[in-house]
Amino acid sequence: MEETPATPAHLTAKPSWLITQAAVHAHRLASEGFGEVGARGYHYRILAALDEFGVASQAELGRRCSMDRSDVVAAINELAQQGCVERTPDPDDRRRNRVTLAAAGRQQLRRMDRVLDRVQDDLLEPLSAEDRQTLTHLLTRLLAHHQRP
Picture (cartoon, rainbow, N blue to C red):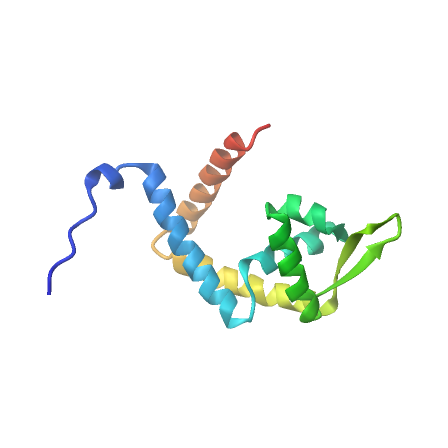
């Protein structure tokens, strides 16, 4: 069997490449974990936003969760079928739907939080608690800088 060549140093010396590789690995771990509880990443985004901010329109959820409108609609449809959210017409604008977190959605969010806690541990296993805090702080600063209006 042929040995796989090493990744070129030109790539491994670039933080952008390293961040991308870590993100791909993190996404795979999260997707696999969510699959174990019958969920997807979009479900987590929506349930977390509803839990933290309360009732919202589908458009608000899309903005808060950085999701495309069609992805929001599809995810809310799935969550509604599972009994995790309730969708009702907005009394102020019947063209809009208001989405509410149901008790089953709170339970699913707790399951998904446990999955993500495990994913964090798996992903960051080689790092000490202090290194994990430093990484989180640096990534937060980096993203905050690039998300300025």
